[in-house]
Length: 482
Ligand SMILES: *Cc1c(COP(=O)(O)O)cnc(C)c1O
Image (tube, rainbow, N blue to C red; front, top):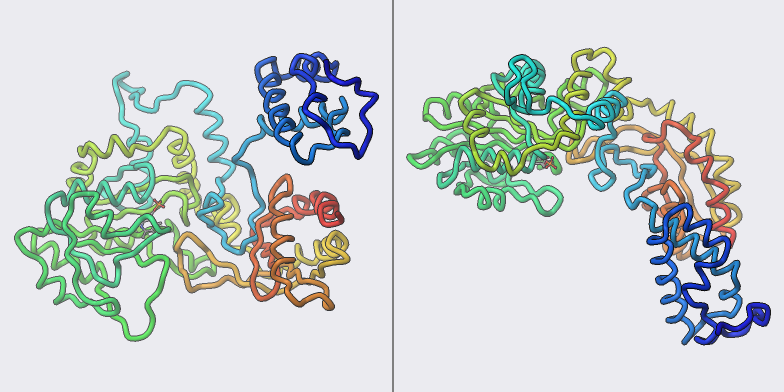
């Protein structure tokens, strides 16, 4: 028998004998309400978990008050809530990096979300030709759009750009040589290293030139009987400065064509519009690579393009046909969910005048420093109040990055909140700033900032609605006030 609850007093240590049974716990009226809401399976499982945890702690630090009905039920309720809460959740990206790979890259446009909802809740013509009622091809849903937007003869889509590169190499250069400049052997995110991808695709990498200088003659000398492909890789996440030279696609194309080998280009980000039209630093366009004479161009769907994760492959008909016929194409195929979002995103490009409003990634990149600062001014007072007395906040100019390897050196003038320890306590502020960063990450909609320069910096470029932050300040103040 469990001890009568009334006899338990605060501050006394609980013993194993005082732990209730699962049955007694489940019979409490509030537990019955939980069972009604969630079913017996989940609630019983959480009861077991809770009791196991309490049993464990009964040997050490379990206070008797924790075994009172109200406390037990609150713990049970919270366990049920946690079990059902999604691990993947929205966060507020104030890191200063707009297209942040660890934070899900490009946010999707409303049109893309609407298309997912419209087509994923019912069967669709994913691989079904509605005209003749026969089997269709999922590529055909986006190929005409991609041709129009890039000027390429043909196009296909896979799961992501890493897959697009792997597939291109496997289909066009298995057991043959691929020539790449030593200045372009990139590593992206630690696990995508060009030499490793070559090996995985069964292609033989032939490096030419040096880290900072590669010339047309280097390529010419390297092309031989066993060469299948010359590959250009956009050095997206680093920049070599100083005395450098590389050979452009336009210069290479006549050589590869005359030698009977193919020219491929991995663009990485691959913006479909000229960003300089929006006052942003310029990125090479797939269309330009096609015009320059590339046979195949690969790029990502969720970087500057602003869509879902996808790998886009555009180029000459024969090359794309070989890529489509490779068995890896099936293994790397894009799911219907991102495909729906990709089509809707690509259609936005048909109305370029509206793009900077409709495409969130571009909209965020285009925000003026003045409009970002206006949000900062709105937030600074409420933030000060939430952070007092330990921390101070001020409006400060900041510099955002595009992210995801695009234009690694360029910075966009931005603004935000600079949070420091109050003057008197600046010494050893590192731990205190980490603590604050952790408190922000623990909010219901976690806020991700960046520590640097003895401050926690909240770059507000990606915060379009200050209410998202304002609504969470009471919770923040409460955590910090402990
Ligand atoms: C980002 C990038 C990739 C990988 O693309 P994912 O879409 O992340 O798979 C490959 N090559 C370059 C040059 C890149 O910038």
